[in-house]
Image (tube, rainbow, N blue to C red; front, side):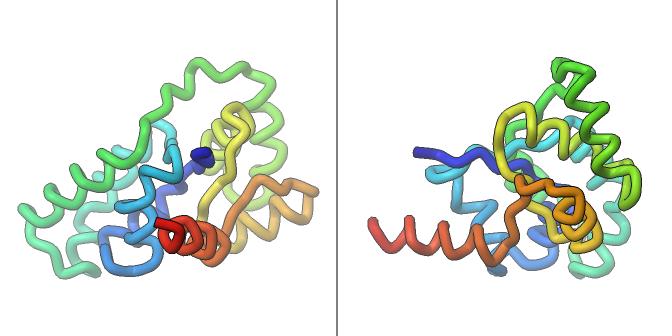
Amino acid sequence: MKRIIVVDTNVAFSTFLNVNSRIGQILLNGKKYYDFYAPEYIRSELIDHKAKIKSIGKLDEDRFVELFVLIMSNIKIFNHSIIPKAFYQNAYELCKDSDVDDTAFVAITDYVRGRLWTGDTKLTNSLKGKGYSRTITTKELYIDFYRRESKL
């Protein structure tokens, strides 16, 4: 059975920097085990940070575009406008003390009853401090991914 995972922008960002990392391997090879989701604006966030991604990852334009297409082909873009307002209100309350820009990610996570995969420890700690348990760390996800791969 596939698990539903909502991908934070920082996870996609990390994949650009090292496709062979645990994060990259899970995101690029995990489609058979996970349904990856993200809000529509993950694309614009990545494009807005393109210069930074290219600089840190030492990527030329062609490699950036190639990775962008590859990464986005593994993530189902969720039209967050279909989520009922109550999910956004709850997500806002959970995120307002850490980063309101993460509200859509939390709202989608709750709506699809998935797990939020983020490398943002400030967000994770803030959410956990408020009793929110729908997050998953890269380590936890990698253990699950590795177990599933080992069974093949």
